[in-house]
Length: 253
Image 1 (spheres, rainbow, N blue to C red):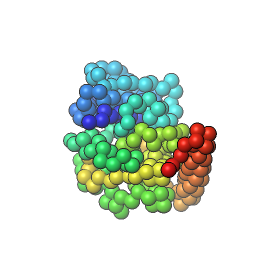
Image 2 (tube, rainbow, N blue to C red):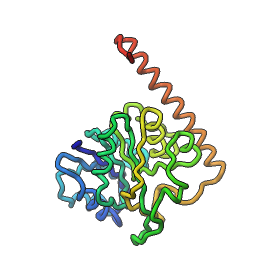
Image 3 (cartoon, one colour):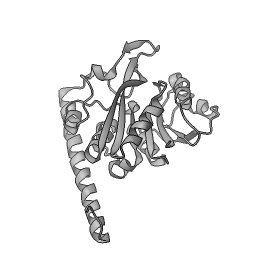
């Protein structure tokens, strides 16, 4: 079975961090790694991380606060294994997550991203909704559907590391890293959706992801920015591959 990398972005996450760390570490196998990117936390998050005794844990502490997109990009560049999970600081992994995602990747080498449903819980851990995707009208992973209404929930996703050659760097005009990575996976390969909830997604006042609808003008700007970024990156990457094949006398047969 493939070893995996888990990338967790942390910023002032002490309140829920211990429970999330334990839920992840309980599923990791020898050889797996958990990269925690501490985005210059000012609470006790870093001290908590220093007390965790696990051979899988690696901590990168940013010298200054750079934001969630930059934190995940940093972690993605540090990942060493072919299957890379994205992870937030305040959720809870449910049993079987690692195994189910790895199996989906192993069944088809064209799969570049796997995403599952998630239960929605509040700050106290009480159930708010049994299915996150049901609150979004069901999962739809096409590029057009993503531009219209994003269903890619980063903390419920994992990627094949080969996708990163095209997906990184994440454009600063991309609204969020999960939208970008999901759309890129769909452009360059396949996305598998697992309807079983393998995560408890915690919504509370400190979430980075917006839980309320944004203004119409802001949503329009986000969509335009995402379309431009996707077109520019796809063209640049495919032209680069064409030039590489031409220079080396290789290419599709």
